[in-house]
Image 1 (cartoon, rainbow, N blue to C red):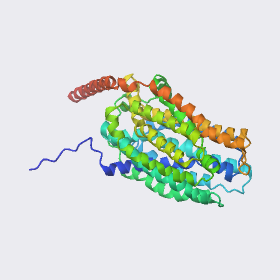
Image 2: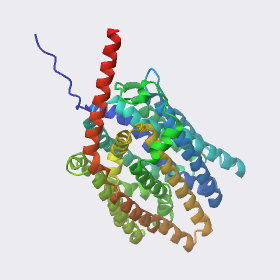
Image 3: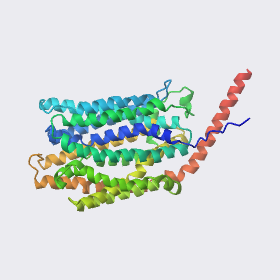
Image 4: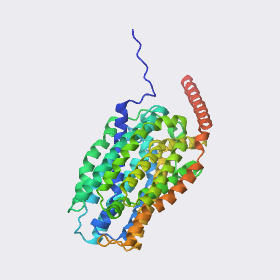
Length: 465
């Protein structure tokens, strides 16, 4: 008789990687499309930049508040198909509302356009994206068996996401240069990309099951974690607070939406935005080294180096002007610099969850993720609002671009994000949880073993009686 070979719990499998990353690909591209929302409002719908900025702040504040409850809802969901998995269906609402948002007719009354565009924007960001952000880590740790697999998923999985984002960043600006000047063109663009991306995104829901029970605390025994306890645990997690502040600042920079303005008015051709984005292909080989580097260096240190490269990228932008080779160099550095945070950021979140457990609180992976998401959305709100305010201060008019408007666009594309990334670097340099994790993991494992032994002894006593 032949013995059945034991399944290696640390083996990920290429097919599992593609299944899992399908949802990430979908949501990542949705975020990229939302980056064009500002110019759609100012140049197509002809909305006032200042009012638009205020409404974006309001909508992102709503998203931030919703994010708090999103994580709480996910952490307290128990269904036959799992805890995080059901919320994958939020992608349907996300893409439908994105299409509706960009389909706002140009001939509607101004007030109706404001209400329509920003109602759809709030639904995308505050409701559907919130649920997807909150469920990701919760779903992941229940679908895969080991930490090594989780690292592989985040490392190699982001290669897939980055590759698709690379293709998107080339195709979308090129098609935008044609469709954005046509009646209903933005809606066509949203459909061209949204329909296939929604189909891809749902692959994870239909093919990846939750198989692991990681609820080792009182919550698993039936006790309900209340909102007050969530606030207490989070307020005592200084590491998650630091990561949340970083997420807020990074969200501010990413949601400035200045890139398309830069290429339309500084470079003189928004279609070249896609061409220069092709330079990120030179960063792709670096992706394969991130998993190897994570074995020699801590995730926090790699992330710090990445933020440093992001800062250099903005220095180059300041001097580049319309110089395409310099802009391509900046884009390459930005692509490489974003890798550690994109690939391995969820692992830092898992460490923070373990730190919660180490302190005697619930792990709350979903809640911690939602808090970070809330911070990011607040940053998004401030970033989108800042761009609107900056354009308003220089009396931005798409039909009459002044030297003051060009200067404002250049500053928002270089100096402002550079200063903010210097702050991020300072914050990340003080993050030392990675150094403490060996000790923390040891203590947590011992506590779990003790709890399991007590549970087994209790069950044995009950069986005997």
